[in-house]
Structure formats: C-alpha cells, structure tokens
Amino acid sequence: MQLQNSTFSIMRLDNVDPLISVLNSLLLAKETIVYLHVLPAGLKLTVERNKLVFAKAYLKASLFAEYTFQKGSGRVHDEHEELDHSLPDTIISHGNDLASVNSSSFGLPLNRFLAALRIFSPNAHCSIRVPADRQCIELILEEGGVISECILTCIESTESDDIRLSDELNIRSAPIIARAVAKSTHLKLAFAEVDIPGAQLVHIKFNAENPPYLEIMTRNEALSINVNLPFSATTDVFTDLSADENVEYFYHLSLLRPCLKVLQHADHTYIRINQNGMLSLQHILPTHDERITNWIEFTICAHDPHEDNGLMVSTQSQDSFDFD
Image (tube, rainbow, N blue to C red; front, side, top):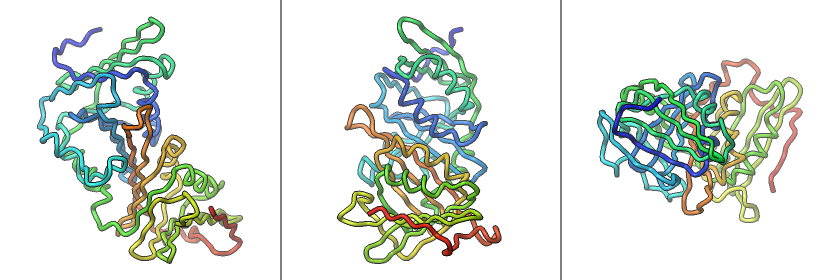
C-alpha cells in the first residue's frame, strides 16, 4: 500500500534504537496515545495520563540522517519561537511551547507504534513519511536487505487540546521555588531504595540549609526509608541545588515509576518544583554524537497527603541512607 499524498515530511534514522528508547520511556500506561508534532527544528512527542502526568520528548533534526520538514494545513508559528534557548543547550526549558505546534498535529497508539518499529532489531534502518494531511504515516524499516512497510492510521489532535494540556501541566504556571541538576545514576539508586513493596507515596523535600540537600522518603506498614542526597564539592551527585525555603511535597509512587525508568539512559536530570507542588523531571539523553542531546520531560502533580490517613512518612523506625 502506498500513500497517495505527494507532500511529505520525511525522517530517516540509520538505526531505530534511539526512537524506540524514547517512545518506550513515554509509555505511561497500557493505552497511552503519543502525539507527534513535526517541527522545523525536530520531532516533539507528548503524552499525558489522567491529567496528573504530562510528558514530552524532543528529538533534534540533527539526530536524523535525513530530516525534511513540510508544513501541514494548520497554522505554524515562526520557527524561532518553537524552542526556548534561555538555558544552556544541554538543559532546554520550555514554557507554553505547544502553542507553536502545527494545529494539525496527530496521535498514534503508542503500543502499536512501538510494535511496528520493533519488527526488526534495534539496528534496523527506519524511514518515517508523514503526509501533509496527517491522516496516516508510513513506516519503512530495512535490515539485511529485507524491507517492511507499515501504514498507521493517525488520531486527530486539535491545537486547543494541546494548549490546554500544556497550560494545565506547565511547571511555569507558578514560580519555581526549588531546583537541582543531578547525575541520573545517583537518582536511579536513590529512587530504587525507596521503591518498597506496599509504598504508595513518595515524600520529596528540598532542605534549604547550608549546604542544601535533597531528601527522598517513603514508607509501608513495616518500615520507612529515608535517602539523603547532599550538595557537596566532594561528591558528584549535584552540579546545582537550591531552594528559596524548605520545600516538601508528596507524589504517588505509581505516577513516578514510569517517569523514572529513563534514568538508566540519561546523563543528568534537571529537577524543579513550583509553588503549587508541581514536579518537573527533565532527563538529558546522550547520543552517539556528543554535540547532540535529546531530552524527555515529565511533569507530575503533587498529592495532598492529608487525604490518605496515615500514609504520611513517619520519622519512626526509619532506615536512612546517605550518598556521601
């Protein structure tokens, strides 16, 4: 089957593994829909779960062996408005950037998209063709001279829906009161310590003492776990950590787990909490070319611990771990 539309955006990868890794990290739930936004400077992917978690990933055009952008039928803002370069290139921070996306952006069932990309090994060559009408996309994979072609029907997405989601789960919707840049390997170990059977909430606290440090705590019916991550010149845990005051909020562990699985692939992670308790985890992903970095950002709503009668972290019977 061949697509009849003569106008395409084309994305070609020498191996499909980077795209599979990013998409797998965005799989928040079994029925996740991923929305793709083909922009002049790269491919943006967004997902959400129950209006409690919003995730977005960005793959720069320079990651692709070929990247040809073709405007669709909707409105596209000026290319220079699509990315906010106010922070260093390794930590790209975005405000309401979905407002600049083509209004004819489209969605795909993430499980089906991944299944189509996994027909061959992660080393397979991959070409994605997106027609201007965005009704379907064509995947062409090749490995060892064998070619697979797959047509996936798209789910329409309206610009107003994209802007609404970005507004509701935007870390910049309130002042940022705590921030840190951490080595992802240390965060992976810390969250693995507190992910204990029966735990439902994770207590995250920025201590604004001198020197400041980050506490991650949780509990089940039998014990409590407390992990301290210090900001110190003698450790490489953080390159930056600051808080306007002591900041602490609770988050559902079931919502955090899918946001943390990418830590094993990330180089470092940018952590922010705003005045409403919204948590942002922006993972910076290395590529085969050290000049190119991609990222995945998760925004998670805070939970009110007083609604859970006894699930708050106790200071009794507590095991403590320090990353010195």
